[in-house]
Every structure is written in structure tokens, then in C-alpha cells.
Length: 322
Image (cartoon, rainbow, N blue to C red; front, side, top):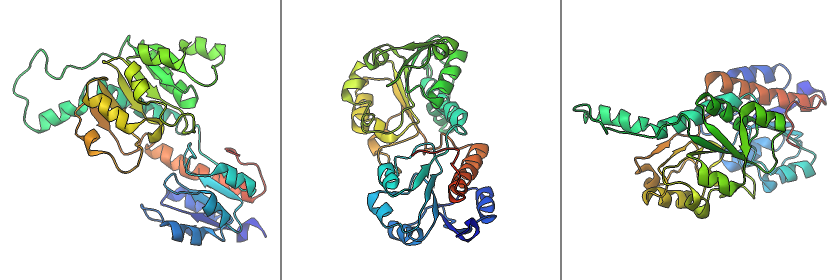
């Protein structure tokens, strides 16, 4: 079978450049809608596909993978791949790929935007003006927290963590980080990083930003005990994955004033966001859009297509997961 007679299922709307690229080499089954496919239809259409271009809303578990008859590659349009059972795919000889690097700076930009919006109460201020509450200047009107010369704690010093550190350096921040593996000394020197245990980071940081993948040992990394160690003036930022934070514990900490605020792009049960969280004025929320710049999302779409075609043509993909 030549690559030209192969079929690739694209499970959800992507940027059109990716579809055009695929159509040059394969038959494309394109679910061109915003919602994606129901689980059974997804499996039915994937069953005889040689490749799948998936998104993080597609649940590709072991049972799903067992139902695939011809698949050689699952190309996820994301840097994360916790929606895919990678060991099950590996056992079936199916390559899994992702789209790292391209979204690094875009995601770090947004993480820092959430940090700033939460610290300086931007959303509250916007609402205050829109609702006609602004009557006069006051010395303590919507006062927030300084960012410059404060301490940021970064969990995860991978690509995005490093990009976040570079932005923090521009604000003359002290930069603490914690990771399973220590960064090279050259990187620590370049970015002014201090490697510390999680307990130290939690206790000393004014801002905590999460940049870890969702793994068994990072699920609920920020739990009730971690929140208890944080400063009452601290702000938590999460652009990683929702389950990295124990959402109920975070809500309780925010309600009780045990931390000052949060900037959240991800949630435990997306797209559901708890009403108690939405009721809090000191929380900035966004609908999982940290990588959502036009240029980045377009490049992510094309990169996933490139990964899929590389595998189908018998080449190693640029971004292998397994």
C-alpha cells in the first residue's frame, strides 16, 4: 500500500493548511466541526484509518486502541498526550506524536498574562468600570500585588517553564524552581534559577506557576497540604493540566483566604468549572486557551499532519512520544 492510498482521520476542526497538506498524500476523513465526534462514531471512523490526527478532547484509551485495525500513528495536536494510552499504543506498534516547541512562548505569554491579571486585579477592574461603579479616584481602589522584585516558584523547568523564567527575569523576580531532574548548571546560571525542594518553593514563592505534564505523580501536585504551605499573599497560576491541582482544595483555600488568588486556564473536568470557583472575585479563569494564538494553533495543526505523514511514509516523525 502506498502512502497515496492511505486514510487519515482528522477527528475535529483544525486549521485548513493541515488538511491541504494531508490531501497531497492521503485520503482524508475530516470531522470538520468544533465539537468533535461522539465516542462510538470516533471509533467507527478510526477503525480502518491508517493514521489519526487527534486532539486532547479525544479519549483514546486501551479499549479504543484495541478496536483499531490499521492505525500506524496517532498524531496529537497538543504538547500533552494524557488523552492517549501511550503504552497500549506502543504495544500495538502505533506511533504517538505531539506538537512541542511551537507553543512554548505562546503558552508562557499567557501564563504570565494570568499572573499579572490576578496580581493586579485586571478582571475585577474591568468589571468595576463596565458596571458603572467607578465614581472617583481612591487611594485603595482595587489595590493589588506587585510583581517586580517578587519571588516566582516554577514547578517544571521544561521548555515552557524556562520560557516563564525568562519572562520573570524581565520583571527582576527571584526565580525558584522544582523538578524531578535538576536543570543543567549553565541554564541555572543563564536564567538565575534556584533549585529548591517543593516545600521550600511553596513556602517562599509569591507566585507559583505550574508547567508539569499530567502524570500519576503530578496528579494533585497542589493539594490541601501544598496550599497550606503557601503564603496567604500567594497567587497560583495553572496553564498545565487541570488535575495537577486538587480543585476542591483550591476552592476552599481561596474561600477561606489562605491564598490570595489564582489564574486558571485548565480545570479538572473540562469544560465544567465549579460554580464556587466562578463566584470568587480573586480568580481569573480562561477556557484552556494558553496556546491559542493564530500563528501557534495553525502551526500545531500542520505539525501534527507532518508527524502523521512521516510515519505513514516510513520515516521517523520529528516529535515522537513513543
